[in-house]
Image (cartoon, rainbow, N blue to C red; front, side, top):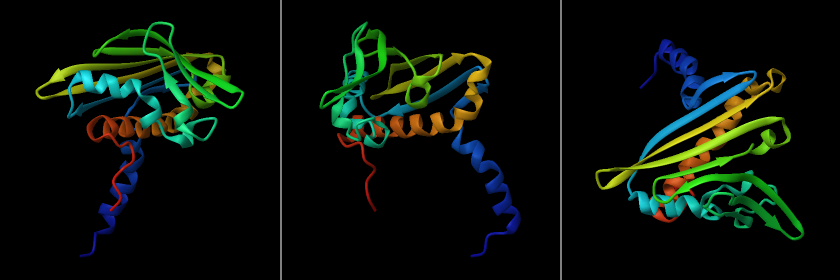
Length: 180
């Protein structure tokens, strides 16, 4: 079956919008990424999985190249840290941890860490039938020279990959996508 050229052009035109669906606002001095998804596990199991960051975070987005070096202490003042050999990085700090309901962290991930910006990331869990709803928000603010709008698509892409991995890990115990 041959797809009409018009349909191909329409799909190509909307593809960028679909891939950045979680970017709710992007300006040179601010960025807001949001996502909401249904998890087929209880909030208790989802919260436990969220805290086990070394099991679901992608190694490609670590300084050491190995997600096993990550840890997340889910308590106020706790560290989302990476430690390997004689090296360490604090990726974010926990602002609040309300067991089975909400985890809030502050800091800049990736290239944002070296910029004069402030980021707050919030994971909120609510019961939904036999499972739960995970609402995610990452709000970043900085000076107008920060150029956050130019980083929005990349930050969104990485965070959505991580949320997909978290969902798979919470639901199946494995973060990697099943291979065909």
